[in-house]
Length: 161
Image 1 (cartoon, helix red, strand yellow):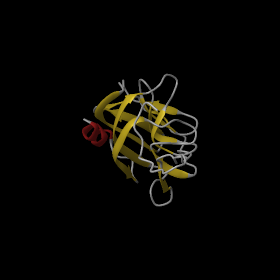
Image 2 (tube, rainbow, N blue to C red; image 1 turned 135 degrees about the vertical axis):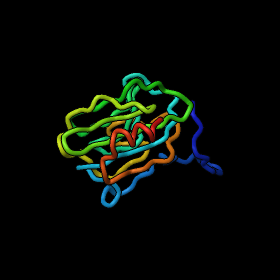
Image 3 (cartoon, rainbow, N blue to C red; image 1 turned 90 degrees about the vertical axis):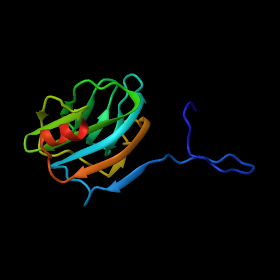
Image 4 (spheres, rainbow, N blue to C red; image 1 turned 120 degrees about the vertical axis):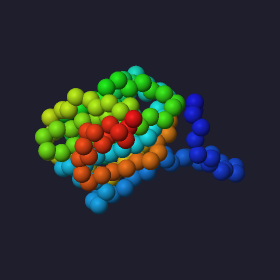
């Protein structure tokens, strides 16, 4: 393809390559009721009409990007950050949810809070870099942090600056 992948040693026969997907159990790692996520990512492109999951599950996605926004999705409502521009440069992104609101952040800016239905609708495992419903990012993800509290807007603005 157009992007480098993990080396697959072969001798005489082609070998199917498994996807590079990092997953964690939901239990003990993230709550669908209240929390925050922070990640650093370089996402040089997001193909048109595609979302790239940075942290997600097969239903709700606490942190993903499209070609113009950083988002959080609780299964029914989406909160968007201010403008996001795909870039090979590492960007600091975050989201928070709890109570009746959820918000996405990037570049030290908070998006407009959206109504949170009280459950992030996380199903299956917590995936870093992929979810069954959406695509994988073209780029890298590092320094993912999950918090069991909805950090304040000021804290997340400082972290993403």
